[in-house]
Image (cartoon, rainbow, N blue to C red; front, side, top):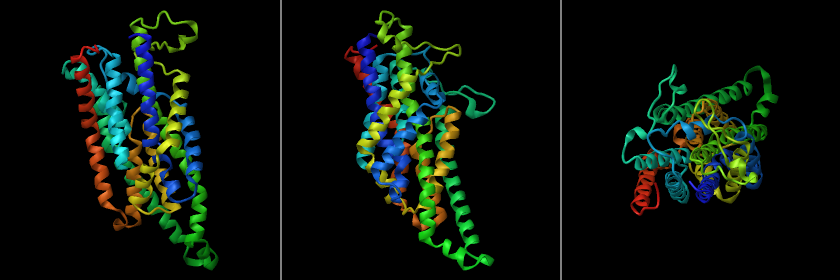
Length: 379
C-alpha cells in the first residue's frame, strides 16, 4: 500500500465521516430542534461540542471495527477493500438521506466492510469473524455478538426505556397535580409551565445524546482509519516516511488490536461536526416532526432513554445504531403518550430501511470489489 493509496483511503474515510455527520448526527439534536428549545444553529453547535467530547472518550468501538469483524489471517486488508466498503456505505447513506429516512450509518459501514472482505477473499465466508464466544454474549467478538444481536436488543431497550421513562414522568405530574398540594401545584403542572421546565432540562439531555453519539458513531470511522494505517505499517509501506509524517504509522498492541491515536480521534470528531452543520435537516424532520409530535417532556424522555443505551454499548465496544436507538426511544415515548399518536406509516418505512441496510451495503461493496479486481486495479 503506497503512501498515495493511504491518503486516498483517509480521504474516502473522512468523506464517509462527513456524510455520517449530516446523516446520523442529526439524530442527537432532532428532539431539541423539534420542540423549539434550541434554534437549529444552536443545536448544531451543541452537537458539535458534545460529539467532539464523546469522540475523544474511549476507543472500544473503534477497536471492534478495526480488528473484531474481519479475519486478517484469511483476507488481506487492501486499499480497494477499505475504499469499496466505505463507498458501499456512503451510497446507501446518501440514498436514505435523500429519502429522509433515518437508516443506520453504523450498519451501513459494517455491511460494506463484510461484503468487501467476502469479495476480496474470493467468497470465503471465514474472512468474516462470525462469533468468538465469551462468558457473556456482549463481551464476545464477531458479527453476531457485536452487530446482529445488538441490532435487535438495543432498539428494543430504547423503546422500553422511552416508554417507561415517559410513563413515570406522566405519573409524577399526575401525582403533583392533585391531592392535598392544592392549587399552587396544580398551576405548576399546567402544560406551559411543564414545557418551560422540561425545556431547560432537555438542553442538558440533548447534550448527553450528543456525547453518546460521539462515543459510538465517531469511533467507527476511527476504526477504519486505524485498520488502513495498521495494514500499511505492517506491509512496510510507511517505513520511509519523512519525520513529520511519522504519526501515520499505527502499530498493533499486544492483544492484536490497533491503537487509536489522538489525531485520528480529533480529525474524525471535527469532520463529523462539519457534516452536521452541512445538512442534517432532512433526518431531523422525519424524527422530530413526521413520526410523532414532541413536547419538551417527550424530548427529555427520548434523549434519556437513547443516550443510556448508546453509552452502555459504547463502553462495551458494541457499534450500535444511533438512528435505531433514537427512533425506537421516540416510538416508546409516543406510544406511552398514546398509541395512535404515532404515525406508523413513517415507522414502517424506517423499519424497512433498517432491515435492508446490512444486506444492501454488503452487496454493493462486494460488487465494487469484484469489479475493481476484474479490471486489475486492486488486490
